[in-house]
Length: 155
Image (cartoon, rainbow, N blue to C red; front, side, top):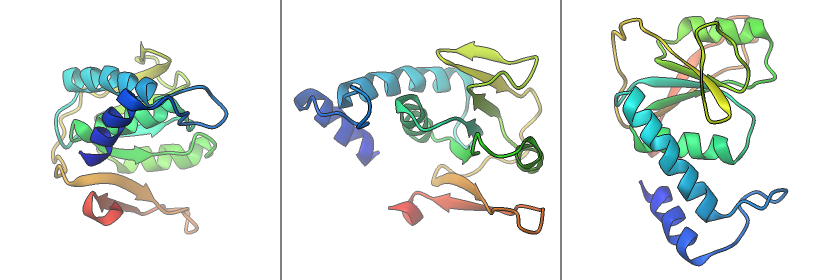
């Protein structure tokens, strides 16, 4: 993955901040991405879907990078969406894991600063390794529709 290689190169030679309002550097992002990658390799297979309900942060960036390196598809849910909207979308997706900053399920476990819930249901169909993100419409018809973005479509 080209972006990860760029981060590795910048982490060796740069002390630039990656988030303007924090003191995080590319080295911090690189190290955090490696941690999450090990976590995902132990928990998920290629093509499995991770639903992220997280605010934008260095952890968010590291999770997205490590999930893509691991070949996982990411469904981003806005933490500010209503519970009805989130539930509606989650019911449509055949996800393998949910990651959130809030404890949303009695069976959630904690990893670093976040809670995760790994489903035990059989995943009938995994997505391709080139499938990167699942994005949902705003749901003006009260029934949001999902679209899959591939790596090629977001380059």
